[in-house]
Length: 310
Image (cartoon, rainbow, N blue to C red; front, side, top):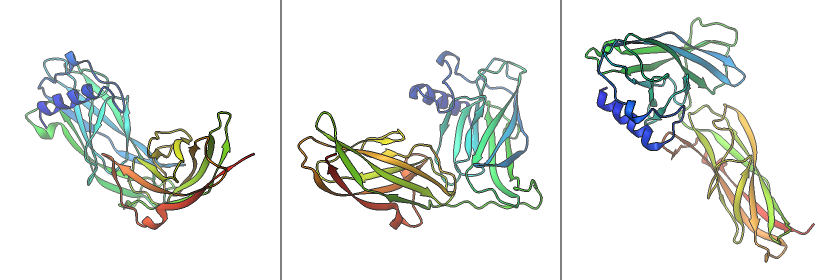
């Protein structure tokens, strides 16, 4: 990596105006000065929890540049979708998710002074069912960019160990994650009731289940509604326009969530059967592309909408 790459990262963060894991640095202080820098990492051990595995990679950066400088780090995830942020937090930009996602961040804590040694952690969570045997994953890599002429001095690979539910790290087996989602949904029926303004409002119950551990950022619901019926939101509340995101972020393997799409019909609607619709479930990861599911047939379901006078 080059100093130019770092400047582009900072410019992108500043231009976006929003950072996923922190705030952007002031533009006047964003330039990175070349200098001799080293990075060392500890061991990444993911511990079983009630929601998959979690753990942190300790990182130490030693900066010997002549001038104070912001530094960029580039992380290659050991498991797709495992990155959970930095501690302390700082700005990050996500790259392509294939085959292993690459993430560019600023070294947290602001500009490093000459001779400064800084410690922080890179945090991970893998939403897979904890196992009675230890597991391992390879391919994790961390680079700190400084313009150093010796790339080996600022790059470090790391292995990932998953502790077993019995507390062991011995004889780890390779962790093999799903490459396709395995989700399904069930849909009830929608009953609309008359409101004070004369319009009709009701809830369409939807249950979403994710059986696998494929990397994803979110699941979305794509409804097709009968004529005269419109989508006005989702409960619990989440991003919702033509489609609605399922609240709660990424799904744990085997997790199930109940939500409700909020439907409205105009006042002139005649009470009774308003027709049928359907809902399609899909997942996204990385730059928003839909993921392939192992069985698309259970990703869609039909429903009916009825307007009922209380």
